[in-house]
Length: 381
Image (cartoon, rainbow, N blue to C red; front, side, top):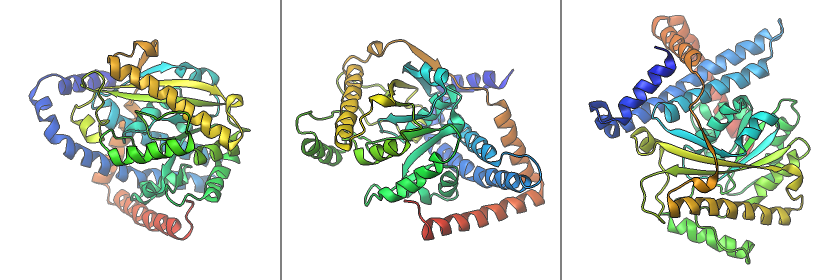
């Protein structure tokens, strides 16, 4: 029995009414804590491997930057395994997703934001298109302070920005690092800036007020917050010469809801508990030549893209059908056999070797202190 067969067997045991599945909601909180600790624990190991590659690069031909990208792609694959594949969350793809694999180009991924799982669904799309090593997210600066993970993601090229007190010059500095490299890239951004929650009436009222002020003749959004255009426009303006297209993404989590109503998107804990088993992602390719240069025109264009996305979501919530989205492909994920072997060997080394544990702890302590020092005294947000 191969690893994929084992995965299918395990997922079926969780989905069907067994003793294990009945305990699943009660165990979801424990599972989330275990996963969080496991992902944090991976960072010193991956950082050590990258640092060793940097040292070796002085003596032999080693592409340390490529290894850094591969190490982070490994981290993401493990995260996708825990949060998407193991709980049985299916990722259904629609629209121009095949263009991502066929064209092999630098792109901006621009999607709606509603759950802590959104980025993992985007990473599933990147994995399908063989672009996982390229993906870089624009994230709120609070995430930079996550132990070890925050600084590590900054080092590999992800961008942190302030939602309040936004500093364009800091964004330009971060983009320069990507702009100066010859490596292909995916830039991913959620222009709403925060997650949409249909129960958060205060945030929705503030969003509607912004829409009335900024786009007085365009109406209101029902299933998203009004986008913050400044950061997205600056990103495209700075990277336009290298970008080939913008991919506008519409993401819906399929849940048991009456027609015409929408629940809050599932949290990671709820997915682990079996509260959602299907996600639907529609992507539309827009050539960069069709994206306005002017800031005001761009803001209007961005809001129009959100309106298109809103209509697609409304079609689903009103009909409980994705037939209007067109043909779909369900992505089951790539084989994780070697990834899990590496994870098992790392765990075994930690358990049996005092030397490995010592190296690991030194890397963890020094890396954490160094990361917090850099973020404190030389922030990039």
